[in-house]
Length: 212
Image (tube, rainbow, N blue to C red; front, side, top):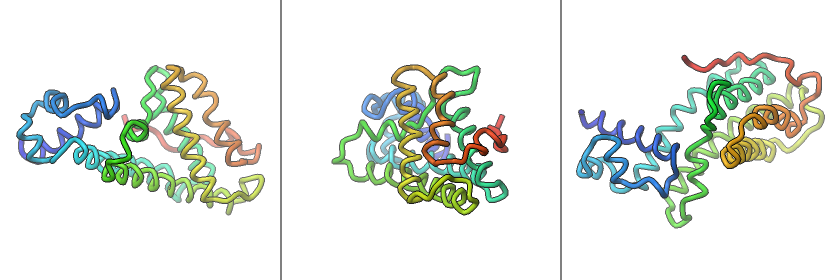
């Protein structure tokens, strides 16, 4: 493998292992074993597991950002954007109907496992969370401007609540190994949290579809 291929392989393996397990349980030896590289090659690219994690966070965000840019495209109405988000979460994060796994977000889960003494890791996780919340904020403002909501709420607080609710649903589903309730509850929970007018509940089909 070239140096670039080795680096990308390490990032991808780190993502997969953290997703399957957790940050604390994944060590450099296991990452190297799964990636098929030596520890010397690992430390040539990354000074520590924490530095790999930080770069993997940015790597993962660039992938998710492409999806979010499509979901929240201004070509879609705010309600269509909301339905795109729900459909994305139900398929890419909670698994489709043929998949019983709760995929969730490896970095949101990892954030609860990492000590606050690692400032670089915490900063990387905050970056990703804050960036995702900005997308929620744009959605909320669009729904408010289009008169889709029952009442005016503070958009910044509401965008944070949406983020917290979504990941709470995912974490609960992973804990209970139960996705049927999440599939039933996710959309209605977001509608209620937003204060979406009843006539817009389930009124629009999503325009986003997962890549095959």
